[in-house]
Length: 119
Image (tube, rainbow, N blue to C red; front, side):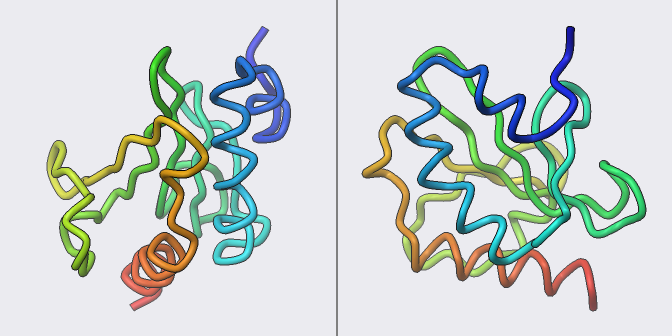
């Protein structure tokens, strides 16, 4: 059965991924309060009326890492060079431990991504 909420989805992850998402989630929730939902099988934060409408960012767990990505990630200022371009306008970063979460950098990315969707 698919997870109904972001918290249900993240709670079901293996411990290593859960430690990463437990570090990441407060940053996302601070920038995008109440915007999370499960869409296409993973957590997505959107500014539209439903998950996937005006999507801003997502979290997707893999066996060796957690991907934290942005729909308009290529438009974000990234002085760290950590964001890797993906399909269309997307970009993401792979997180292999909670130490990979840079609170200040990620909060800045989240602000930029949110502002791109509200402009």
